[in-house]
Image 1 (cartoon, rainbow, N blue to C red):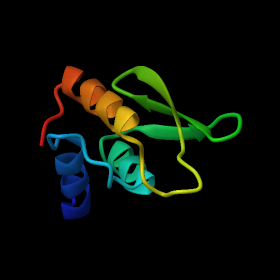
Image 2 (cartoon, rainbow, N blue to C red; image 1 turned 120 degrees about the horizontal axis):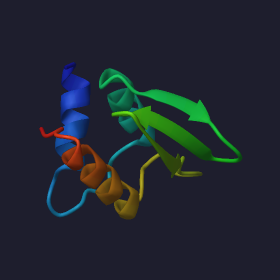
Image 3 (cartoon, rainbow, N blue to C red; image 1 turned 90 degrees about the vertical axis):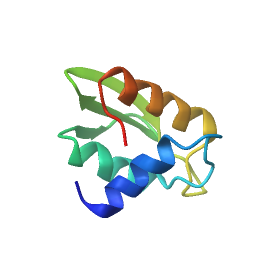
Image 4 (cartoon, rainbow, N blue to C red; image 1 turned 30 degrees about the vertical axis):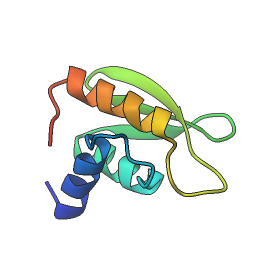
Length: 84
């Protein structure tokens, strides 16, 4: 795994939940893990990974992801055996 993606994974699993995780870095991590990202309506994106589809909202106008989304992503990754 690339160092930048490993750093993003560490941020996702940080306690307390980090508010400084950039969405583009999360997308890069999903792609590194073998995921595919497709655009949906508005700011929604579908992430196909682990044989599952998760829909998230790209944050705007700020580039950082809110804490609730980071916690949701952490839970999804954890339930599929991904850990830092």
